[in-house]
Picture 1 (cartoon, rainbow over the protein chains, first blue to last red):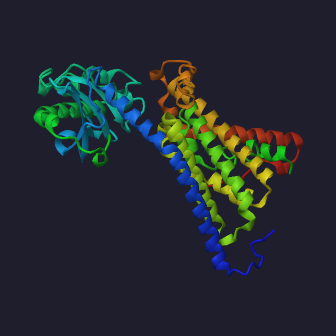
Picture 2 (spheres, each protein chain N blue to C red; picture 1 turned 90 degrees about the horizontal axis):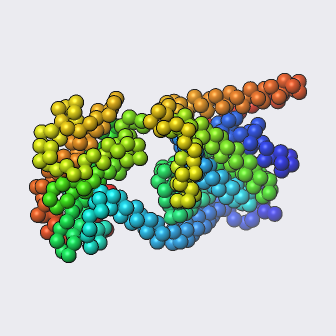
Picture 3 (spheres, rainbow over the protein chains, first blue to last red; picture 1 turned 180 degrees about the vertical axis):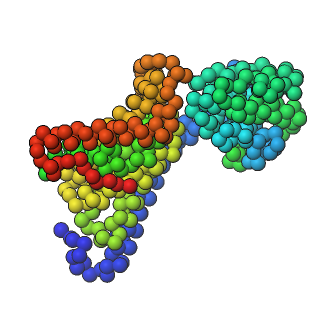
Length: 222
Length: 226
């Protein structure tokens, strides 16, 4: 059996390079195979996950277009909470707009940004709000998750006039929305972000439904 | 050393979680629920087995100056493969483990076993050692995950569907409502303290056994990893 110190006629530094290079090529080949074998399935899973998230905030609204393809990308730091492009999905039925799903960010959570998904009917009423990701305190701020409490479900049915804009706040700030015991910052951030998303939708409704779809590969998905 | 002793080594006297204290970062971060702990434990076991087998097969032909480099490439490839497979077939678990799945690469337990054990042993012995270490790590993860889930969420196996699919939904036990759980157990300090208690219990058991046998040299192991 060839020992590392055996004389193979190849200079030692070269042998080291060959060993390391050979391993890298083998590892590369293995990963290429695994990537090929899993790629389709991963894309499918990813798509199903997105679809499920978007459907959740559409609250059963009927539509007949391909939501994930028929989306536009917008940017509005003040109302959507991030400088990054935000995806807006459009739901239409027989070509008529019925709803839109925005993916805004609440930049002022207790520990960083809270990414939301907000479904809005074409009439400006909220169909549903869900949290996509957050880093809020477990047991306090994470009550914004549907698995932990039904707080976030209470947005459904509200709109910019209901309650009036100045009451789109948590109770502690004189608004209509409950905060949690021991956690005000998180609900305050979410309520603010949802109100801003509604404002954005109201200001851009025509454009959102008339703009041509952004190609999927140019989009930053939520 | 016979195979059974090598295997027991990983479970007891050289347990990576309780004695060598290797791989603490994922151990503490992911052990918030039983199913997370089980998922990461199995993934780590798989990577450990693959990398130890590779190290045992090729270790003796490697020059010392590139050996660690070759092991790192091998481990990184194994972890990436495991990660892709998990993303494709266990997507919920993949989401739940998040960054800690790719971070198995940095679990020093994997490199340590490849470098200090497997590369110098036969393939069977390396496999048995990897299994022993992997199962030992898995057991500590599962124990810590169970305790933290019970104290913090009031349940045991409450999200096993992440691991075993929809038909495992509702298999877990609910001991008390989640909102009255002891939050501290879910946060990092709780993880440290619970692991500390487990290490203390393990050392106490080993010390008591040593006393019984009057063999001072079998005292609590002092080897500490990073």
